[in-house]
Amino acid sequence: MKIELSDFQNKVCEIPENFDLFLGGGRGGAKSFTMAILALRHCEQYKEKARVLYIRQTYRGLSDFENLTREIFGQLYRNKASYNQSENVWKLPNGGYFEMGQLESPRDYDKYQGRSFTLLLLDEVGQYSTPQLLDRLRSNLRGPKDMPIRIVMSGNPGGTGHHWIAKRYVFKNAPWKPFQEENSGREWVYAPSTFLDNPFIDQNEYKKQLEASCPTDPELLRAWLEGDWAVARGAYFASVMDEKRNAIEPWKEIPLLPFKWGDTKAKKWEHWLAHDYGSSAPSATYIMLRSPGKEINGQYFPKDSIIIVDELVTSDPVALNDGLGYTIPHLAEYIKEMCLKWDIRAEGVADDAIFSKHGSGAGSIADEFKREGVFFRKAHKADRKSGWEKMRRMLQDAGKPDKPGLYISRHCEYFWQTVPYLGRDPRNAEDLDTRGPDHGADAVRYGIGYEPRVTLSPRIINI
Image (tube, rainbow, N blue to C red; front, side):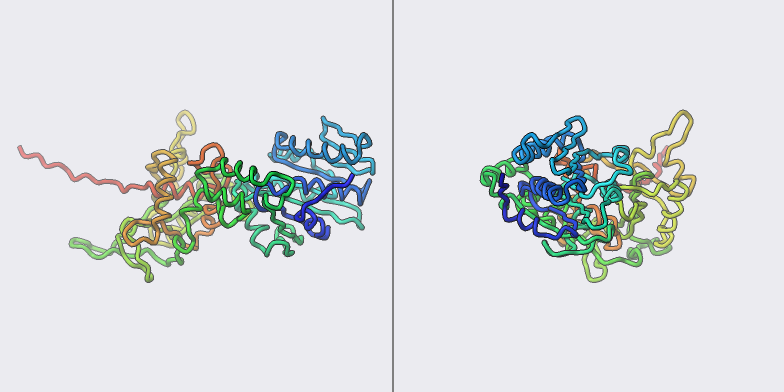
């Protein structure tokens, strides 16, 4: 049997096996079929030494690939290849071993602990919000000294893992050019494809199906059609956020308001903290200012514009969705240190959840913060949809001379590493995909809903 390959698949097969691969780009580019071909070639070359593991996040995701292997191996080997359906394992007549497995949580990894594979195929990696589990699999990559070992990943832009994939594999070098990936120390090649690189499908019909699947999301559609990872910088904020418009150079201090009659000392621009609490997940705290309508550093900020000047985020530098497990007293000290640097009180707004009592007679997380000298009150959140819409509108209005916009300091690294890449909830296009690192975005949403306390003047009653 002769297997016909596309130009894209031939080009992938020509890449030396000592390079790891990321098969990216748009949908319909036959990336999964390419993985099956690479596995087949590996088993034919190395025979009984070949041990291949193919991974998807869920067992349901394995079904299509299982059918693909049945088609290819069945036609090629007939009844000489055996498939154990209960274990999802192919044993090929050349001695090659090919297993298909599922990996969704740390507990799922236990079944691979201590086992060795010579080729790892990790499909649809955009479904993973962080690379942590996939990185752990690299410890299973072992083979004889004279045999190349390799990881091949595939994924599409716009998923919950968009941010870490783009950072690691897409923007390191031009497509088809080798680069060193920092975490693994290995040489990688980014090999993109789109549905136009797949001559074995009805391309016009497939394009229509993609267009019908996201009629209100032109950025995601373009990413799927063209495989453009820059366009789908999250999909949710892609159409309203522009680094040139929303990013500002770091400020060193909070500007002062003009003196008014009766002032005894200079007052700073209105300012507050915006906080999203987390322990196992990251905690995010931002310092936010409201512009009175002034020019700073040569840039005019219309009245009621919000400027984010600093952040404190307790996230793992590698896994942006994992927290550092700080206790509240520990976290409160860091928040107070940040506020001391800006010469402001440690007070602001936070998620309603931290005001819930822990149990009968127990205090809340907000109470614990208060005992440590950090004061939060409930954010005026309304509903998530309204909060996100206000945030999107302010991002879009940044730079306009007559409308309040949202501006973020380049010093806020976690914001710029996460918020531009957050995807839409696949079940609700009006909301964020909460599987991604949305902690900074949530804190900003709370902060945008901030309303100053209103002090009522005492009523004078004439008798």
